[in-house]
Length: 131
Image 1 (cartoon, rainbow, N blue to C red):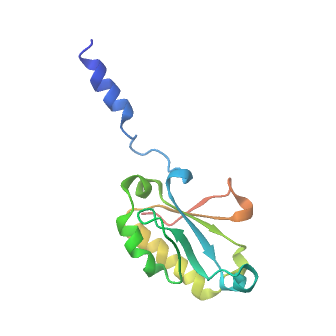
Image 2: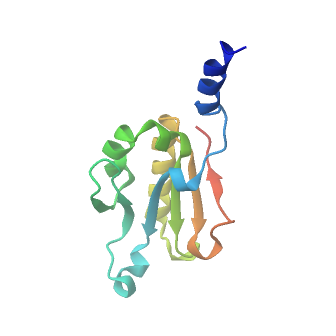
Image 3: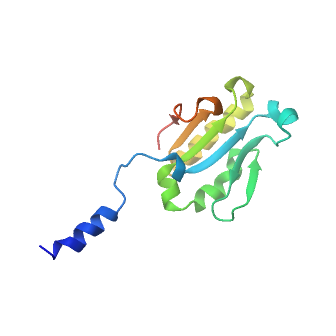
């Protein structure tokens, strides 16, 4: 019986396949609409802290996030991208198109993407697309 104890302990420490993604372990993105730039003094786009370099940047185009998506630690990929938004009516058509591009880029890499307005957090997260 002692023979199985180390094996059992190792199995319990492995991540569970199909475990639910956790916001706290994913990549956080603040999606700043162009309509808010005067008020917030923030550049519009996807504001993210690079988990590798620890440098925060705002990316106006979803494609600009590709280097970050491609270097995300595996645990962060498994837990997805969590996008906090302002009110949905503030985003113009081009900004909404950039969200679709980001969803496609994440999906192509097998990364789940979740979105929620700041005022509806923490319970209002919705999955976007399906990788």
